[in-house]
Picture 1 (spheres, rainbow, N blue to C red):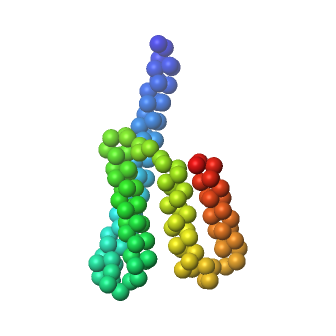
Picture 2 (picture 1 turned 180 degrees about the horizontal axis):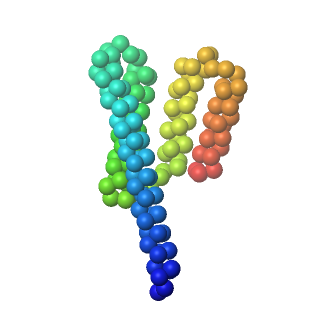
Picture 3 (picture 1 turned 45 degrees about the horizontal axis):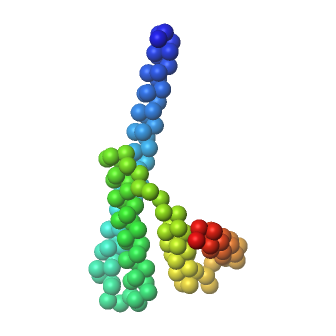
Amino acid sequence: MSQNQNNHSQQKALDGKNELRMANERRIEAMLEINDKYIRTQRHLEQHSDITNLDNLKHSLEVQHEREERMENLKNIIAYGIHEEVDERKNLKRNLEFTDHYLQHHAAHMDEDTLNRTMEKQEHRREQLKFLD
């Protein structure tokens, strides 16, 4: 192997390590952000679960579960390099439910353009689900 090829190989390895380091830094930042939201919501649930309606409580618990899964997945990627298999159908259903819940409570306060785009996105998600079935 020539000196030039050896230098090129070393540079590619170094670039790969730097990319991995930067990706892990982003993952750690994302995990910290998710954890912060998780803790705030958990405190809110502990303090106010007696005064919220059942739908909001159920939704909050689902969001918390989703956050737990995302933090666990990020941990596995950072620590072991293991990516969780993505369940597209599950993600679509979850996004449909969360957005429907959001629309139930906020549609009246949304501008028309955003509401229309959100409704179109929901319809697209329903079509994707039909395609996956």
